[in-house]
Length: 87
Image (cartoon, rainbow, N blue to C red):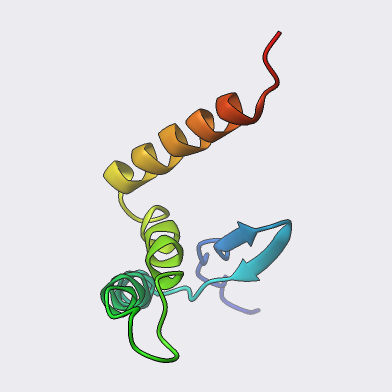
């Protein structure tokens, strides 16, 4: 008889422009990556680093913190209403 395997949380995935990317299972690593991307994005005036890192870091952090998630959802709703053609 084998002992039952401990249940692991499902893999978290991020969807960007229709493509899905797997994120690390560890919450601490995800938070570290998100904070690191935001911080390095502030140095976007330097070569290689760019301001594109800030929204990506916030997207990763939005999967961990409800405050960032709310802001992301409000931004998505605002953007969709803005794109909708006027009647």
